[in-house]
Length: 102
Image (cartoon, rainbow, N blue to C red; front, side, top):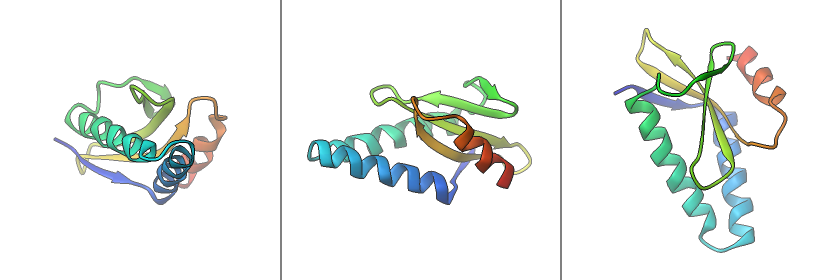
């Protein structure tokens, strides 16, 4: 199993989404983060199962919430690096700028 690292901007994405969902319905933000954790765990178990969507960035969509996890794999350290967690309707250029910084 690979280690996982969630970059600060991706952590910010997660927090903002959880807060937004909690404003819509109490406890929904917790459900969002629980689903995200499950998906991250699956990614760590099988990081190559998700397709490469942009250059070397792989993506996977959450099952219930319309969010996509963008990540790269560092094979030298057996680490999955999550660079963004964005709503599927958001502009994909957002993660591209982050990827340049990574």
